[in-house]
Length: 134
Image (cartoon, rainbow, N blue to C red):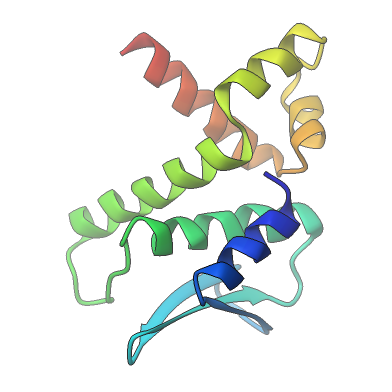
């Protein structure tokens, strides 16, 4: 999924996406008075923008919003669900396999191929390795 598709999905779902100076984080999801908002740090790289937008949309699409007062186990579960949604949209398993067959085996090469960060690509590989071996 390309970044433009993520913005289109947000628009279809009525989610307002804005860029703000977020010093402590690259993105956040907020629900207020029945409306959903995503804020992205205005200093994001293109790869960060794609990954963070997908992650925050993952919160929206999976009903995974939480407040700071909820416990760490709940937060971890909801963060993992949002991350899983982002992984499976940005790097579908069949496309990952095809890229690897074409010779894109290094994390940096795969990250560039999919337009994501290397850190995110490492999460992708971990996710699918655990999923396939389960």
